[in-house]
Image 1 (cartoon, helix red, strand yellow):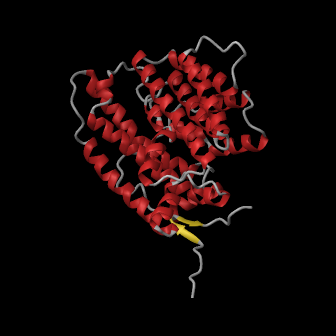
Image 2: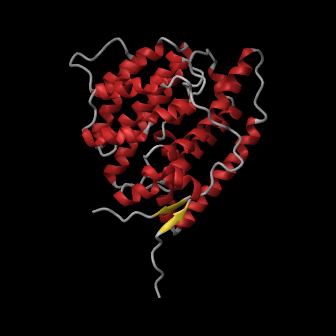
Image 3: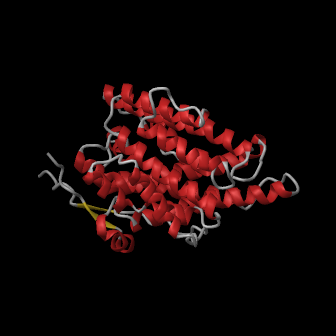
Length: 334
């Protein structure tokens, strides 16, 4: 007798034994200012704007950058909100359209004072706006690193669109290679120590890089675990590690969720060990590295806390789901 299809799955407890504790940034008035800034560009129809409001990206910014002062925190909020705008506008677009979106964004970052003769697109104008504010409170080294990392991010989003056009579903290894770019985490890390002038060789130290990759991979796994139910219901789950594992390894939903959780926990253990043995550079650089790496660990906590506090994945039941961790499988739409 054929077994009944699953009706639910259980989420792993991804915060078990994780030592990084979030606290909100005190400048909460800036959260509303940044949200109003997004809405002033009218990037969405009323339905998409309502979805944006339910995501509560201000919570993410507040928890991920708790010590940022007003000017710094404003551009942090703008960046977190901008990620959503680009994600929404590129999500169903063709590779050709996303290539132009990426070009508009990167042109604004590289030439903030030279708008195109024919005028900016929404993405170009928003980028130019928040980047000019960023340049007022960041070092030259931070600015250059961000441009490099954001170029990698926009290129990855373009490649995802090309994969979508061609119906390509990657295996686990190739999926992680692309997803590390599309997740947008690395350029977000550049905003932790925005005003500090830190040499590239410090940030690129192998141990610091292991922490960065570990946090990126934990963010990928958590996001894909939490977003799977919504994405499988809408048929938009090809770019999700749970679907990739199910297809590649013949796993059930729960088996794939458990496997992703196990991989996550292994990465978390290695991360904590590396964090306890940070490299030493001498002088003020050591404090900057500690702040940067603490921010990387705190990002992991933030991502999980926000996933339940916003309505992006679990609707208004997020805080309840965080407690019991049981997710009812949504029926597929259409």
